[in-house]
Each structure stands twice: as C-alpha cells, then as structure tokens.
Image (tube, rainbow, N blue to C red; front, side, top):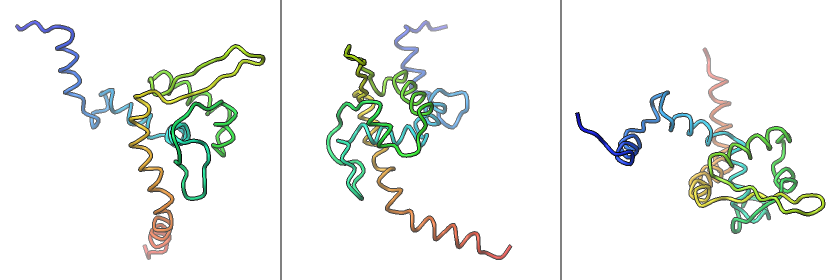
Length: 147
C-alpha cells in the first residue's frame, strides 16, 4: 500500500470534490454561497455603495460599516445580517476590523477569496433584474395553463 504525504492526500481530496454528492464539502459550500443574503452582501461590499438605479454593483470594493450594510440591504434583519457576516468571515470571504473608538467602529471588507467569488456572483445579481420581467411573464403563463 502506497503512503501519501499530507499534501498529496489534500490534493487528491480536492481533485475528487463533487458538488453532486451530499457528503462533499463543496456541496454544502454551494448551498451557503447561493443564499440570497450572501449574494447581496458580497455584491454590496464589492461596490462603492452608490447604488445608482440599474447599476447596483458600481464602483470599487471598499470596507463598509455594519450600519451602512444594514441600510443598503433592504429587508435584512439585524440577526440575519449578523449571522451571515459571521459565516462569511468564518469562510474567509470577508474580514472584520474593529477600531478602538467610542463607540467601537467595526467595518467589513472582502478578502481576495471574497473578491474572486464577488466577480462570479456579480453576474448573477446583474442577471436577475434584467430578466425579471421574462421570469414573471413565464410564471403567469405557467399559472394560467389549463391543468
């Protein structure tokens, strides 16, 4: 039986990732990163916060404070925003920086890993509003079909 180094074992496991298998770590990662709030937080952190009509991903990535994220992400509860930011930090997609001021200033910023995912999710977030009318029309047509 051949003995493999830890690095070789890790490389083999990585090559064998299969998101179609429920036991695969990438299966769970896809579930996490496809969450609505993850997508919107990464898109928001990847923008300059200007959020012009029709251009929700404008500008360069920059750090944002919790209150700014909360304001820009309409409908997110404080609990959900906090939980999502913690999971993104745990996954290494964002960093949390606390500055010792009174009160403490906390900001969030995309890491290099988060920036790479942001590029992928940006296309999805851009696609949704462009095609929303088509989706709504298809839903209406489907719902009005005779059984």
